[in-house]
Figure 1: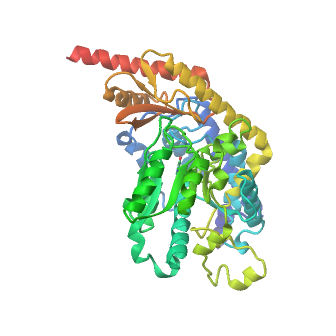
Figure 2: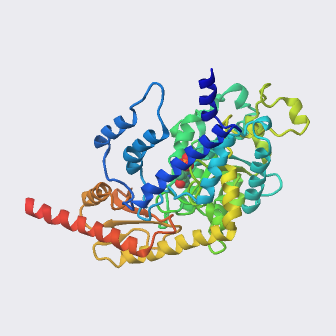
Figure 3: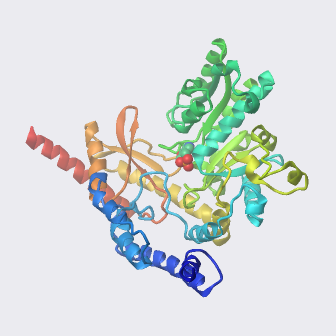
Length: 495
Ligand SMILES: *Cc1c(COP(=O)(O)O)cnc(C)c1O
């Protein structure tokens, strides 16, 4: 028994000397191994492809029935795990909308996970629920939402987009047929319901439509203009066509920061066009939402306050560790469409007594206290600090686009980046760009993205990291051009 008591004291947080020391030792060992890894100053990835990682995975799974010491486990972690993770904080890691995390947010993560609060009910979260509500109020105000607004933290953009379309669907059924989807499921006319978004909108619009029982057929893609934004004339045309076909457009998704180009659909114009039709406007600002903190570029989000709901992703340009996102709602009464009472969790009498149970606003039940990460980041670096970082990356992306344009071997697809993504290609056959992408990844020298624009393979830098310098970019471009030229030459030799 004695030994069990000792071992649980070393395994769970408690006041004993053993508990305190175990907590400190575990976190210190973990932090030291990270610092050791970063000390090595390797590239952003070991370059090893999945087929060759099996031996490392096997070493990590040498499970001992009665467990092991921290030292022996961390030896394996350091040898077999850390070197093969993608180092998102490396200045040459530029592939996706995948940010280097802010150090203050990492400190918050320790508190979030150690206290392990759950945001569904007040008796599992205490003040955490109030803190989350306060951050949401701050966000609603930032987006110029009025007094009726509210929101919830989510796991990210996917869940936020899903919530926007879920509420839009249910509100439409309620208003059109006095039909309660929560109670009765989809009405028989649901197959006629349509969602509009630009062809550059995120794939989760289609994914949500299918999960909401409307099918991917419900999503009508609107053409884009030369800046990759929703083409307003085509939006008007599509609306007329849908009406002529006796279909029921009920929502439009305006993307504020598309994944490839960061382009921003003009929400105010979209609003003017769809207002006579009574459509729900959902602004997917997963990427561009952070511009709200920029003095210089905040006006790019003009009109976003007209949207009925907004997606924001903090694990992108807000530099929060995954996961961290939010869903904002202009009229909080719409949360009533997904309201449930569970006797054990949020009984009606508690609500009447003013006790806060946030579960009614979320599609999740158990939910992390991610709001603390954002609070600590805001306290430590301030809104201006955030704004400066964001502005820097946008200005930097312009310099990078100009640098690429000046290179005879390369073509820039978006010479004036809207946010901080730059899309370009090595001139020549399409497969050269695929080869460059793969070769660069395998070399471990840089991690960049690949995408397809108008049928052509392109390369992409997503310049979220404010520590990336023009020298880093020059080095990557030189690698890219070398690989491209070597490929052409080897091709000539072979032919
Ligand atoms: C990233 C992204 C999403 C999806 O968000 P997750 O956090 O990955 O779930 C949705 N829309 C846009 C525009 C995005 O950039």
